[in-house]
Figure 1 (cartoon, helix red, strand yellow):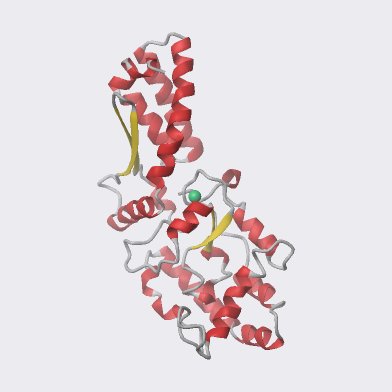
Figure 2 (tube, rainbow, N blue to C red):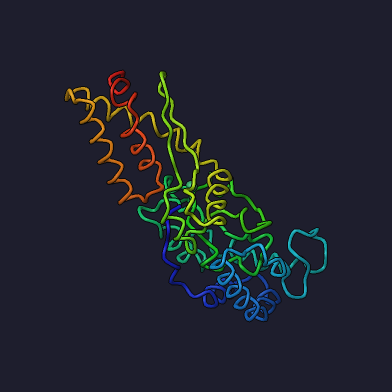
Length: 292
Ligand SMILES: [Zn+2]
């Protein structure tokens, strides 16, 4: 997870902007009436996100005057929820629409335009921390929209948090998770095999530790990170072999890389985890790096 500063976009202004071009006059009027509810919902959401209690916001699933989104679309209240989510799907996402510049600004807010959830793939979408289909009042709330790649967004899905632990990490609110090294790589062999694991240290607060593990599992990060290892390691090993490096030099090389990646990509980026493991793996640094 890449920690991000809070978006510098005003939630009420963005909501007003996205509502201003709603398809019908009735929708525009209905959305305008909901402005105070949206502002309150965003304030409640941000307060709960700070205290890791998003699972307590079930009352926000109801847009005022209507049932929660997700009820059959034929119910008489469904149109207002659809009007709210349309603010995102038809007025922020499509190129040329009134809210698209805000969409682009949010989508590119992580370093190098990366996905803030996996920290690796380019962000091609925005992820709703609380799903818009369940929380329509938060459909265009900037602090509920984090830059994400499609695989992470799809894997996360429209899941409503059921308790404090089963929530993915939030790039805007969970900076504390990056104060602990919880991503670890393990290398075994022969043949060379790398795996990744979420192993929070004992000193990491319990809820945050459980969330880091949930985040890692839910977004299938083990598979993503493992798929990157071969290419990265082969180049290093070939170079070290060509230079005739000794095992201690090989260890120093990977320890240095681990430190550099930890500083540039965060202590829980897959590169920092992998190189840290390679630097301390005796089998790898004495034998296997030569088997390129
Ligand atoms: Zn991702």
